[in-house]
Image (cartoon, rainbow, N blue to C red; front, top):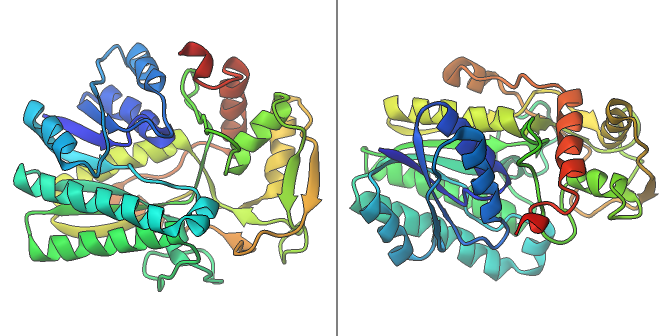
Length: 339
């Protein structure tokens, strides 16, 4: 019996694969490698001493998925696969809707055909839209500001409807906040292709000299220092949240949703200054105009995950900054130089 990770060679998927293997379960990965590297899984194998079978293929390709299910006895699935850049989704909405929704629909059809009914879905805090009340709770009304967010919203609804129609399905929806950091070994981490979309890898690339300076988008928000506040969560805490979700899915039918965050918000400049202090480096930055659609503050209420999944984020902001820089300085070009 094994856990299938769609998109499992990516940032969150590779850390989750490591966590599951260390817990004594087997994993199989399906990934089209459009934003991931097989080197990440080779290093997961190195760190765990266990094999990670990789099928190179697209989650929207029914034949590719069937090959995985035919070759391995898959009893649970974590669905990471999908395009994930907010700005790109605004420019290319049809590509995002086609890719992300087709992947979810095809996966569900193949799971049903192979009598596999436990599914953990990689969702996002973007489904909360522009809600001003904090912290964000799972019961709040949903709404999105970009096509990427809507693909997560729609996939959540597809999975709710599926588990309602077919009571054999056990579905857990995990709404991530802002994953950062890397495995403490420095062997696996975040390796974005092109210009990073997220703050921490951009900081790392500035400090390593790959980029000139960090752009801080707006310093006139109603926050402590005028910069946007977000809930940053260590990627290993997030990975452990998936392990807890798998255990929950085994025992609970229907669909349940959980926030995975720390419940604490840090501003952009607080993160920058923490990175400088922890690592003894300087982060040059320049304040630029706000980005359209950005909100001032966003952080989770993780109480439901604590109560029902028996999970909570344990790693500090200092841990996130230290581990992110440890990965970057040991892998200045990401996984590239290893290929």
